[in-house]
Image 1 (cartoon, rainbow, N blue to C red):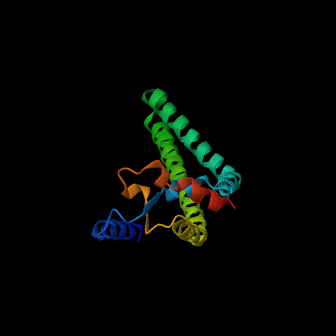
Image 2 (tube, rainbow, N blue to C red):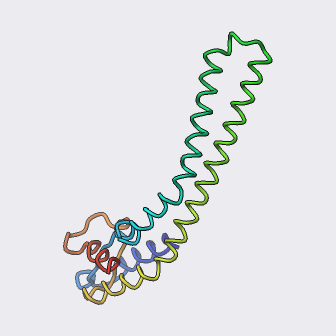
Length: 164
């Protein structure tokens, strides 16, 4: 949807017959949203909520690394059954690590997506206010723009609106 919006906005900007009369602003939505007070509070909450899970993932990774190092260092001196047992333990620890990491990543991504969906109406309203307050015809995301005069970059104003 965001790409469609970008393409539509770019097409509209190019299709306007009197480009010199058209007032266009630019915002870095990502920067404004993730610099906002709400996003920083969200980030702190995420760190607290997932500290235990991150520690569990880190521990599984360290244990797998130790098993691998032991296998590489002592594997040649072990008999086949000891080596196979150690290799099996290593594989199980790698599976555990992968499972824990995937579960953590999935949960974090779900929470981030929920935050973005919750913030979307507020961002949309703030962008509309910028459009009206600055008497603009169009606001483009910074990703769609090669260059913008500093006075037409409205990211800081958007951040102020998001922080009120």
